[in-house]
Length: 99
Image (cartoon, rainbow, N blue to C red; front, side, top):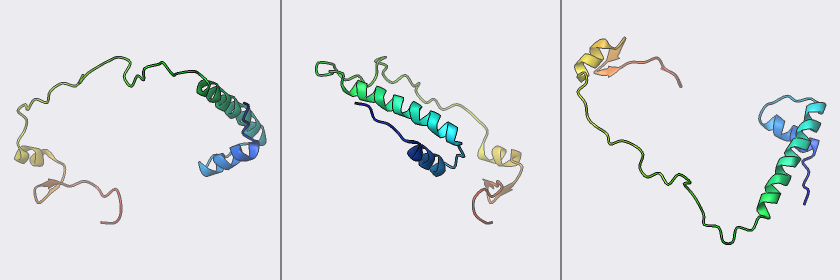
């Protein structure tokens, strides 16, 4: 089952993601996207009836270490070393919105 992605669709998607592409690039991508979709369609035809689903092929269980509390600087030391502080908090430049 061959499914084609036409250049009109490629250009539309490029516009949505704010990419400027030429007609030549649209034709190239059209062919590439169509090949990718054909490949996925081939995968859909594979018989997986007797295949056990595998969500983790390494069978790893909780590979994270336990959290261990270690001594560190006090709140007062931390605030003292901050470039700016206000009412016991580190003051940083505004990133979003207005001050």
